[in-house]
Length: 266
Image (cartoon, rainbow, N blue to C red):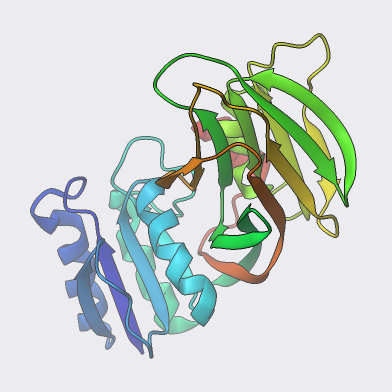
């Protein structure tokens, strides 16, 4: 069995936890490849294990989604909401070799940035895609569409489009709903909207959702996916969101339910 261990060395100092896990897995008979968080995950991997915070797992999940490699997180950060294990539980990793685990499939969002009718960026996200203003605190005009029909125009700090998995991340902090991560839906939560009515919207995963940027004038706006790679937006840009054909396979070694985890972590 080939296992990739991906370590965020800013979190796991001197790879203290990940190296202990690597030794444990090698002793159990696994072929272990240790790589840094910034490196690509090679092909032929049976499991990927991340050591860091949620950002480390999100970064690796963007790679494993295409290969459908199951991924598991060990929390060496702060909250670690997406992580399955804490450092003191790494002995449970040998369950991977025994087949004592199950897989949860999590939907991804596919996003396209369309400018003047041309797609200039394509990406996927496990948590969320965020359109937000720049450093200067000026509201930006945005129009939300669903399957080509206008849903809402508003001015505000931006908008968060999230998966059910991401409902307990930035979306929750912005007042969005808590959604069972096993469900299939697309959540849109306005950020500090200057409007009397600008609540969250929950769309079917069969819908296509567009966020169109209005006249920015001397304002600035940016798009980011799972907190990575901010792209500057222009007036008239469209951020198109739909369910991705890919998914992330999260490895579960425990029987802890979603709401039990929610209570414990938050």
